[in-house]
Image (cartoon, rainbow over all chains, first blue to last red; front, side, top):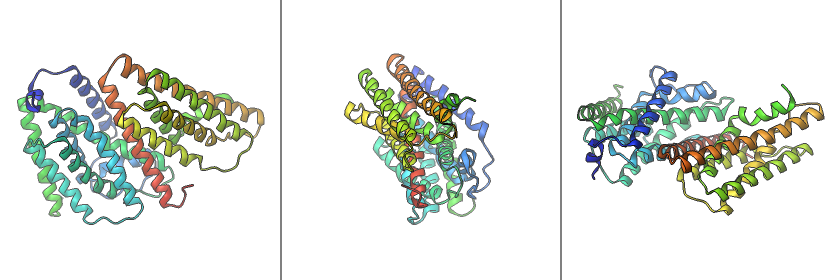
Length: 210
Length: 177
């Protein structure tokens, strides 16, 4: 059965369980959400500071949500592999940023990630899993680098890092929760429209409007 | 709070200890029953050794960094979710136990209270690990909840990412080892 047929078929117990998990996670995220104003680089330490940091950059937020949307669109195993791959590769990028190794065009690549990932969702693109993981992984390095370079010299580094990674993961789960709407015809249109909006937002970030 | 009670809670209030115990518990919970027992026993032995060393007044050690390194390794292996040999899992558990023990110096002046805290820390950390690994094993192996297996892998990747970021930050600040 191809992915489209699988997504349009009767709900499986696994997907129902997944939906419950991601909805709960999305609710948790809403409890902690703060307005996305600009990517200013929060200077607060501790769990809350780390948790808020990824949420303060609209370019990061839309790209993270797009990863989840795309994962849900691709279906299993991408739906859970992408949220596993992204944090690990992002951490590698973060290490590079922390160590002060410069990476060219970081902000451009982050804006481009919104364009590419949003376009993939809008076009309902279904490349092989390894291609999807490669695309997500490459962009994860740039996202991680940007965050790593901005980590504040706060006191509680462990709590900050945990908050930062958890917030990123919950953004993915939010995207997955929205992406699960793609199981219905109207939902597919809504999800693809959301992908188009993310791609447009990426274009705005690229052109300096965002 | 009594010295023993404070010791029991000690591994549960320090983020690095929580990370390490959670990652190791998830990893051990993914293994077969025999390897779970061997790994938990290795952790308890390592923990006892670390706490004993603290009791005998061992000096400053890089135990905090070693604990984060074990959290990274355990989290990454839990994310991969491949069955490990007992030779791979047990030494990792023992290393985590030693590091956690050495990173748990009692904050007490009285020798009696300090000893009670160390015993409490050993009890609390061991119990936490057993509960996490047994819970993971129950959800994955007995109930066969696929989302629990997937959730464990995602949680493992988050812990590994957090741990490596902290280690990199400590290295960049010249605080590592």
